[in-house]
Image (tube, rainbow, N blue to C red; front, side, top):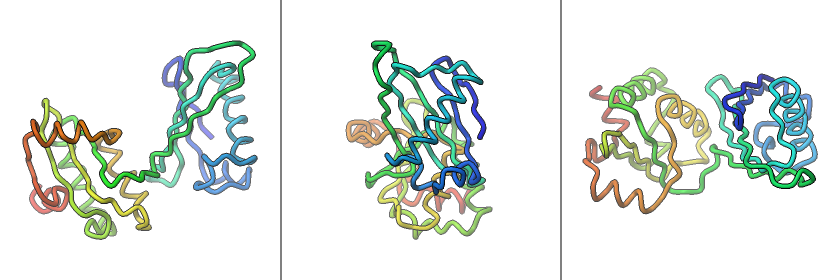
Length: 203
């Protein structure tokens, strides 16, 4: 287990398989409300308090997690303003690997980052995009490139690997219909159909 203090209110935790095995957990059970997962969370919070002076007593916690490329599990814990000193911790968990939306949107700082993703996917040919998603569109809006992925197949066995790859080059946005409408109305379409496959082919 590795704990990194990002800010006064946020830490990053990196877990390996061995850390989960000690609690008889598998990655899919990590953020479930079970006795073993809660025990691991308390161990993490106690360790963060002793090693990083990250005290969460009386705080609300937001936990966000995802699988990394090397099969480690990475998540952040953000604490919010303290209420009463006697108040119990309130935990809100968001697993970024589970998304029921039919659309996902990722932002790229520049076009080169999108091209680098396409090159990386091209090098890892075990990722078959046609089996993972229905379509992808690349927009340019307010000097930022946005990739909209339509109907991602979360049951595909390489789904988590694909998510970890794309997360290396971009930032995931919470899908919002209003923002989607803005992209369609004000954004400039760079690649209208199969943006990832087109990027792999030409860039």
